[in-house]
Image (tube, rainbow, N blue to C red):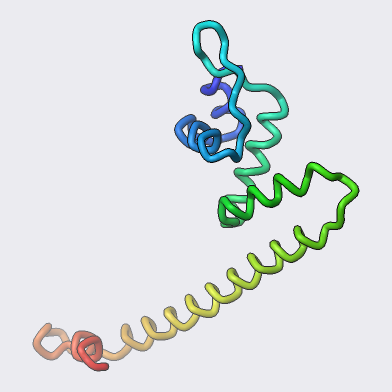
Amino acid sequence: MKISQLAKKTNVASKTIRYYEEIGLLPEAYRNDNGYREYSASDIERLVFIRRCRELQIPLEQIKTLIAVQVDQKSSCQEVDALIEQQLEKVRKTIAELTLLEQTLHTLARSCPNDKVGDCQILKNLQQE
């Protein structure tokens, strides 16, 4: 199948597919005599895997690791478990930071009963350390 068909089947842009090939996440596609890339069912599987990892905000380098460990089907899942645990911790940290941000914005939003910019408590609060 051609790159446009692969993009449609996997919901990944053609430009992104080319980039993944360039950095080694996807193997280089077979090229027809006319130079067009040809992709197989295994490319679909790999690309869906990569897309799902990206949806989970797993960095590209860690996706490379996840792809590499799949080669030995009998190896331990320890590396995979650790990688997912690291990603979970990053998400938890981000949630905590966003919660604090929400609280700060909520406090700011409630801090100004005035109608004029010259009296705006929000702007005054933002100027303080």
